[in-house]
Length: 447
Image (cartoon, rainbow, N blue to C red; front, side, top):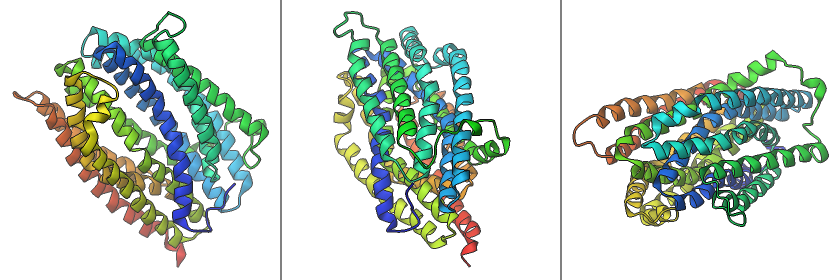
């Protein structure tokens, strides 16, 4: 356990955000490694795997439900020096994770075919996406266990073990990808299915390693089978904080579905270009997301310790650090966007689509970083509904005009990217107004 109620806040933010960013980069590398190898198989396969990878956002939405609630409740308990509550929340989060794993497994296979049928630009794209997801859905289901174990450590201020395990899992994935996708050494390439299978095996390895860490090394929050009987009151606390964040990630999934659907008529080349550009964009969001994930436990511990000024400083300094990082990445996209896309494809048409996407969408990187900081503060304060409302305003103001534009004559794909930039501005304004309101109303105990 690490006490975050003392010491320089900026130092805590950087020390926590750095390893978390590495850990999230490792998670993203699952898709980038797969994308690198499947890009050699043609645009339909790239488009299919990219659409399949977007499906994982739906699973991430579910993982966020108990992840955010677990981090917030354990961090508050740590700040209040309540060891028993921290252990209860941890063990109940494991039970909740198990239930979510079953839901993901069943619904994933049930929705697989209609999902790809609705988004695939052609039969080859649909087949590649289905093959990828059939092999990866078990790994997605196991992500719940991985997230539950890592979230409890983050709530206590410990992030390095999770980062180390994630590094090992991406190494396993990178080792298996050429063997399973391209048939290196075996002579039996599995294509898109091999990409999903490599990721699933890597996740199994990661869950085993984190479980070993808890059994042998972790002493503050531990496995206690006697606490595994469902406690509905604790579940309610976790869900009350985490459900809105899960819905927020679900809106990200809906956003990508809208994009894939509106550009479907442009063919697999356009979908491949967007898929690659979206993966690069999500990778570049990692610094802001890491700062957001660091804001949550730091502000929550200080909220539990009833230190209002440190809560406010956590938000201000976190937003500044995240914004500076996103400004640098925005300039990189403007300067080297074509080279970034060219890492994954040599097709000029695909590079053109992906580069235009990055040049336009990177204009909202700084505001997106600010939105992530607001989200972290909402999690710390225990009210994540404002974050969902801000995201909903973006989806509504994006989806309806996007569908309308896609049915107009002379519709250009660039119109979708410009619309996305405008809607992020609205989302940031709503989030800023609400975070000020929450801080003013919930920190009155300082008086």
